[in-house]
Image (cartoon, rainbow, N blue to C red; front, side, top):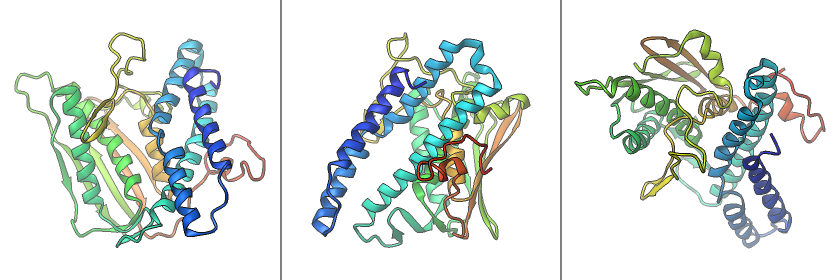
Length: 322
């Protein structure tokens, strides 16, 4: 995998980051920290969006090269462990960097990037608007998202993490709904329903669609990197390849097809003690459940393979949490 061109781009990206940060002096004054923050913004955060896409392209290239052998359970599990370790470390590093940057300026209701009164309803509605815009760009239409929840409900969380999780789920639901119902003569698209509930311990977000569902035997594969029920976007140089579209709302990428959305969303969900699960009814639709800890009592939920490396120099591949 490390020899694939897209992965080599990622390796080079992180190599340049290390060299750039290593050349900086340790901040000792506010002026030093201002320079350090500028370096973090320009060196670390400037090209981060290409990392996930290049990782996905690298895995796809490996999958093509290996052919049927790629589908072996041992190969998939080993690759998934490596990618989980890489991405959970990346989530943690980005959290620390962005938190440090945002902590320089006081914002009411925030400690860095942590919102003391994060409104899941507001975050979900914003994610729905963003995903609908992407769907209309690719398909010319988008299903309505019906969001049900208490507008006064808040909890302490990182809004960006929740936005990412919900966006990936909504993109999948919109794509499935449009491909199943979009060609019908009446043109009516069934709504996607998002229900937000608050319990004593959890905030739970359910995203339900009527996009046809997933066969039961395929559900576990959803957590495997590069598995997708959508056709993968054409690679650069292939017929039908499109560059990401840039407008005043930002970059509009593919609606689905890379196969990284669900595994990464589960990592984000688990990072602070939550989880993500899927229940699907083939022939009807899919319900995705995002469970988030609302008590603020859970620290970073890191698997041992991340906790023990590199500080203790133990890089053993083990299942999550063992």
